Image (tube, rainbow, N blue to C red; front, side):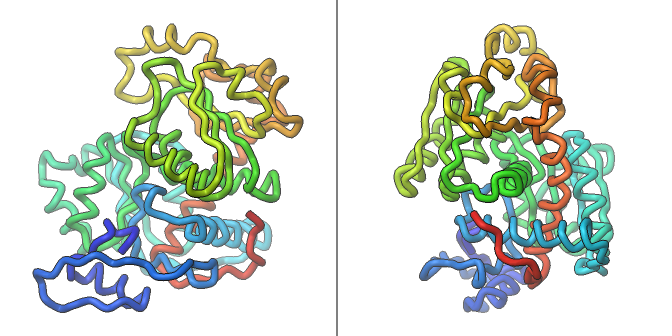
Length: 365
């Protein structure tokens, strides 16, 4: 199953997924085989029920659009129409947090509850992956106690191991390689603001980190151009860069890697940055602040951007990354972006756990 490691081990997890996507599974316990999708997916035919969500690399354009459509639909029904939509009633989510987070915890907890489900928050004191109990055993235990797991971890390999041994879907709440749920919020925010994503140019100005990696695995598929400006030595992962270049050629979008922030900002519709010092990098702070000198986003960068330019930041924000004039300006979409973390994680969980179909018209992309 493409989003379930591109292979199927014959367990309850994969049997359910096969049934939901009209695929057939053998019953032998030892069988392992690859599944290849046939034909081009459409928004009407997308079915993500039972899928894990570790990286946007595993999802095609129509699947990403479908998640955003469901997210926008839930936002419309619940926020704007005041409806109660308990589509996750009777379900529970285990939330594993090796790294703290305001937005990820609040969006997931409140969102799952709002949909009628029960969230269970697990700190490192409650569950220490691979220490008090092996990750394999943890995956199997949680599979019998919850319907889905969201894990915010240091190492992406922890997610892969959880997904390998769990019989329920796993969502990446953040890892050292990817932060895909953040990008869903960013994409919905831009779709709402611009009315469409295709043809936009996004300029990433900062560190070659997990958020950038997730942009690189998604924007091209949606027709968005990407310009990346990082200091030398802070470039994105080489393997992810190679895959992004392949996708850029496949979908006919522009992908540039630069070192000059102003060159990246030139004619761009969206200026984006993130923290220069992530959790676990505190000892590098002094050197990083020196190396990123000149990368602060200011109105000077906006002066060379497209006339309709906007600003995004996944938060929390430090003043050295973007000054107050930009951060609190009408150009800044950061607080809408933060709110959309809730609607998009809700949309994702609904897609994974149900057969929900949106009521609003399809979004324009």
